[in-house]
Image (tube, rainbow, N blue to C red; front, side, top):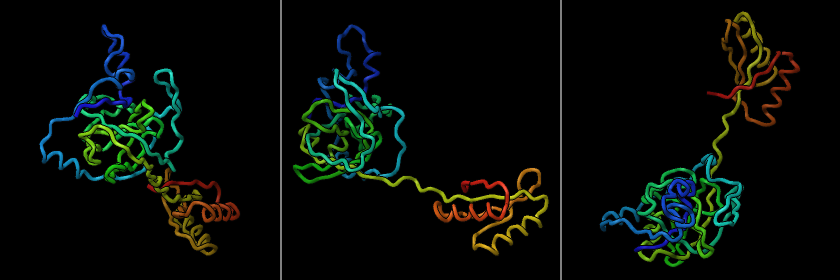
Length: 263
C-alpha cells in the first residue's frame, strides 16, 4: 500500500540534487510528501519477513554522524537525547520502503527495507528499541539508525520489514509503544601491573617470591626489551584490590609501576 514517509534519510543529498526543481527529491522537505510503496513480494517472502529474528541488543559506539547534539529541519530545532535509557513513549508509526531503499540514512548507513531498523527524532544513533503495535500486540526490536519522522502525529518511522513483523504493512500507519532497550557496555578487561627491571631472571624471581610472601596474588616473571626481566602481577579487579596492590608495591620500593591491559 502506498504511503507517505517522514524519515530524515537524505538531508545532504538534497543539496546535491538541485536540478531544475525547488524542492528536490531526497531533501527533508520532500521526504514527507514523496510517495512511497511496498516491494512486490510473494506470500512466502512476506512470511519470512514476519518471522525475522529480533536483532541482538548489544553495545554499539555512538555514530559519528546523525547525533547532534542538535539539528534543524524546516526551521525547527531538534535535540538528540544524551542517552536512550528510560525512554518510553506511545504514538503513531509509519513505514518506509521501496522509494528509499539504498539511500543513505542520517548515520550514512544505506537504508535496507528488509532489515529491522527505524528513524527517530531524538534517540541516539544507534539505539535499540522494542516497538509494540497497540492494535494487535505484536512486537519487534529495531535498531534506530536514521532521523525522523518530522510530523507531530508520528513518533517513529519503521522499515518495511518491521512493519510486516508488526502486521501493519498494508495499512501504512498504526499506534505503537516504543521502549528503549539497554545493552551492557563492553566488559572491561582486568588490568595487570608490571614492576621492576632486573638484568637477570634470578633477581626477578627473588622479587616475585618476596612479593608473594606478603600478599597472595598471581604473578610471573617476564622478559622485556634489552633482556631485562620484570614481575607481572594480575589480572587484578579494578578498584580497591588494584589500588591496594599498587600501594604495596610503592611501599616495597619496586620502582615504576606500569598498568597493562591484558591482550
